[in-house]
Figure 1: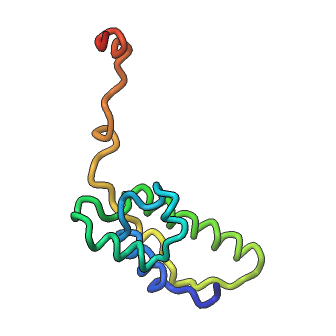
Figure 2: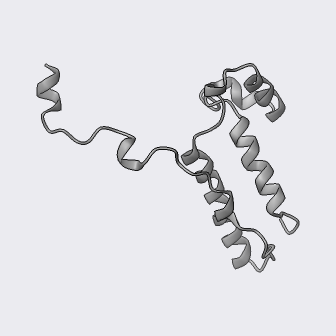
Length: 110
């Protein structure tokens, strides 16, 4: 943990951006190595590769919790780590991600 630096976390983020979007949905994925998963992604169309920004940012947020715990245990963490610089920007605005609530939706679908 003491030797983790920004470069390690950047590499981790790049791996997440190269994984198949369907990663983790198949029980077989649990038995595959990271190299096997990345090799499988190479055969997929570009639109089926790369975890969503929300998922990647969630993984990065877990490091924040790990680092907070480490500091609480007096484990020194590099001061040069900036998780905020690694966050992936969402392409869509939150309001464009799903339709607005419509209380008459059920009635219209009948």
